[in-house]
Amino acid sequence: MGRFNGKLLVSDMDATLLDSEGKISDANREAIEYFISEGGRFTVASGRMVPAVSAYFDRMTINAPAILHNGAKLYDYETETAIFEKFIEDGRKAAIRRVHDERPELGIEVYSDEFVYVYRKCFETERFKTRPYEVIYHMPDSVWRKPWIKVLIIGHRAQLDSFEPVYRSEYDNGYSVRSGAHYLDIVANGVSKGFGLKRLAAILGISPDDIYAAGDNMNDIDMLRLAGHSFAVTNAEDEVKAAAGAVVPSCDNSAIAYIVDNISRY
Image (cartoon, rainbow, N blue to C red):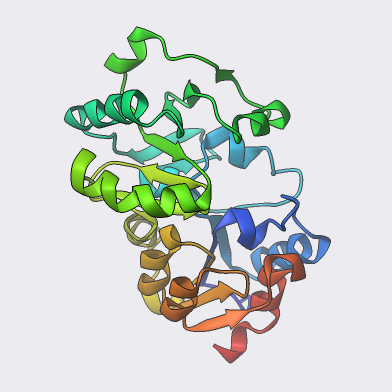
């Protein structure tokens, strides 16, 4: 019997598992390996797409399906299959066209079939130059007929702070959530990281009391509230810290290693 048998550790990626340079520290990597070797199940919950997570498999191991696109997809990397996915309702796509036509200061990305379609470029578009997956820098008409799993509306923090409530009241009253200072994520109604974690725990037969979850941003809050043991990194938004059971070292100080090393305290 390993000391972590029956326990599930779920981590957000950006600014939680990954440091401010987008890297996984040696301490985090070794802690994950130890957690798994002692019988634990480790995975990530992220707004990222399938190849954007597997790009880190040279630095981390997961041994449970991943929660992707903010809970809109559960993906089993071992079998390379989606075990759950839910797409944005077709009627909500018109809101994205309106944002494009009426808000030229905002970037827009549409995620469909694990491709990124850049509907409007912005200051964040440059990040794709270092990404190991295909990005399409225009929006073909055919994409409007495809299923969309996520849309990102992108702007500077002040722009999104102002636009976020307007989007919800004047454009689309469906589910949206901030995943970072520059990102407003649009996903299907009813899904979230918490929703994905609840489905994953049921699949694995793990109770909330045996779930440990860590995050930093608004899209992590319902996941943290579901977990029996929840952690916000010190670089987290204040609302996330308020929702978490404990605050742990920052993403630049190997937060996941700290959680594993101190798991008996919680």
